Length: 224
Image 1 (cartoon, one colour):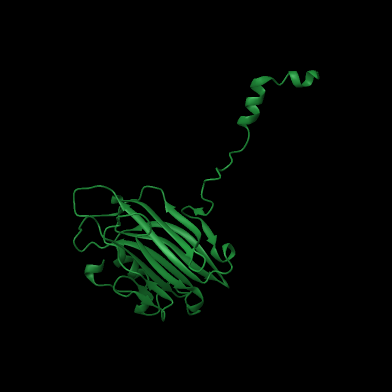
Image 2 (cartoon, rainbow, N blue to C red):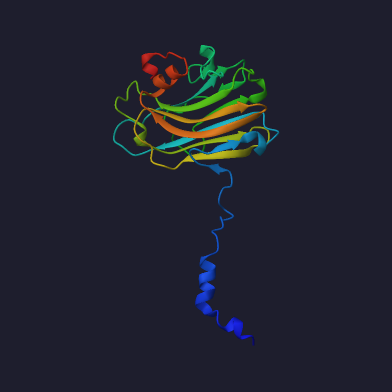
């Protein structure tokens, strides 16, 4: 027997194993992104045109009436502003850009499994002067004075190829959300012929009203 192998011993074998890099489990999702990350969805799926956007969340338990959360979409030009009021797609304006963007309705409780609210988009139908799409989740707080996102958990956002039903990516906001009434989930930006999603995950004091104002839209007081 070669003595060179005798000197390693069991402890040395264990040391070697400890130095091996961690390998992700085969069951770990490979399409998950985190806050601050960018993903080129065009490179992920060059056939992507008709997309389904799903947003989900759960409410933490508390004694008051459950919060009503709403997903909104803002279609923005190169100046970071909406061009017309119809570029603000939400529960009172469910279709925008000549049908290129459609909101499928409001979930008032967030109860149940799966997506709580769904939007459909056809990227090739969007006018070329739309350079960015901002996705926002907000608390409809006409009746909920003082409520905020610290009462919300398990928020996620995902984009699915509507034709193949393949999930392009999923953004799970695993971190504890701070207060405030609005949440900018992320932005889908057109850069040349490609679409890039940036996971923002920032809450905004003032909710939907403040975010809409930043994007050039004035909303009614009870929509803030």
